[in-house]
Length: 227
Image (cartoon, rainbow, N blue to C red; front, side, top):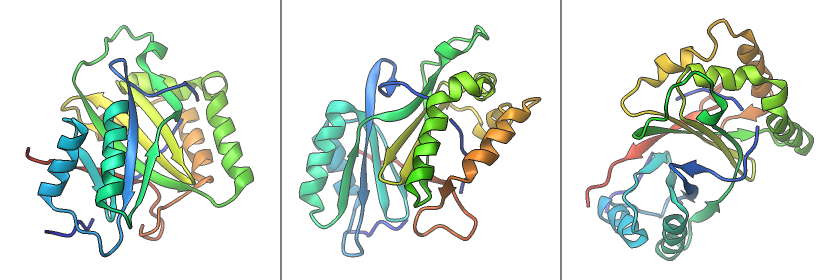
């Protein structure tokens, strides 16, 4: 058994009722492991098999994420609670923000195959600021349309933002094999309002426990499991 040990910065984002992947609602399961928890490749494979999922797992330091269809997420959640009784296991069901390409008028079709980028940060420990952050996102399509216009130019297929406690989970879907850094540059090209939005939103955020000084958004890396 091998213990799982586990930068990236980015931020954005207005509202929809549920996350969609090609018409399928997707959810998160997050495990925050204790020092005594051990996680082998065999155990990860078994967890995925028990959930009936073909999706990848993602990790950062002592956090493990499953991102998949609703039924699979529930099965993974139940199995994780059994296998890791001392770990913090949470099911994150609904995003409070969803952008998809129905917002775009560039004529480019959705990519059938996609790569997921998953990033996370915390909101500051101030309930009034947390509500303000949510309110900004609720009004973003109407009051900050330049943000979604930037996503369209960058060929982002979908952008979702979830919240569990103070933690934010950001999912950005891009065409499979595309270079995210290159695509992301397009969001701010001749678009100073996106820079303004990013600066404003950064005042509401801070890094997860374990981040470096000045580090806010961290990227969860895919953990490929052979089954």
